Amino acid sequence: MPKPLTKAEIEAIFAAFAAHDPEPKGELDYVNLFTLLVAVVLSAQATDVGVNKATKALFAIADTPERMVALGEDAIRDHVKTIGLYRNKAKNVFLLSQALIANHNSEVPDTREALEALPGVGRKTANVVLNIGFGQPTIAVDTHLFRVGNRTGLAPGKTPLAVELKLEKRVPKPYLLHAHHWLILHGRYICKARKPACYNCIIAQWCRYPDKTPAPGAVAPPRAMP
Image (cartoon, rainbow, N blue to C red):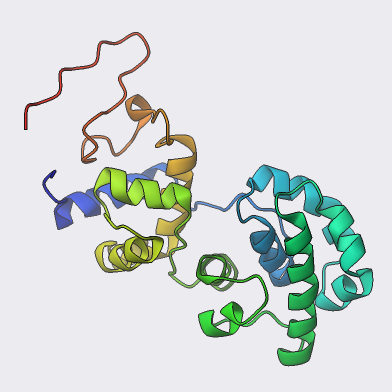
């Protein structure tokens, strides 16, 4: 087992992220809190690029719960049919729009409990909306963040919830608001699943991953004996 990261090393990691990208942003397109919620619901097991292509026309005509309900489930489904699991997602978008009208005066709620009570909204989706929409220091653990948390040694855990809770304890408070985006973007573009670009990694000197990818053309150093 690699040696756990120290508090100083974790501080250095997030200081490096902050210096590199002081105001990280999510890559889903939206026009208000409602369309943010819809976009995040649609993004489960789909790429942000694919969701953005599907929602461009949808959000142009249905950017409120009332307009989404008026559009109807069949028309919503036609707009999002290029996204994985689109039938179930279209149904959830329709139902959550109805729920917002009936239970929240057409407003997106700002608590995890209320968000998770909406159709199609789980803990990860709720955390994304709370973070981006309401500026709360939540951490949404997707496959990228789960990988980075385990691979780097920042927050080893067997489940997304375990990684989330560990990160909440370990990330220094000044960096908590943006930690979600830094780690997801890092996993998406640098710390990739099959072949991480360790030679371009700004936190490589602290990362505990033993099989760091050498730069193209370079010879990988021999692994240390346990």
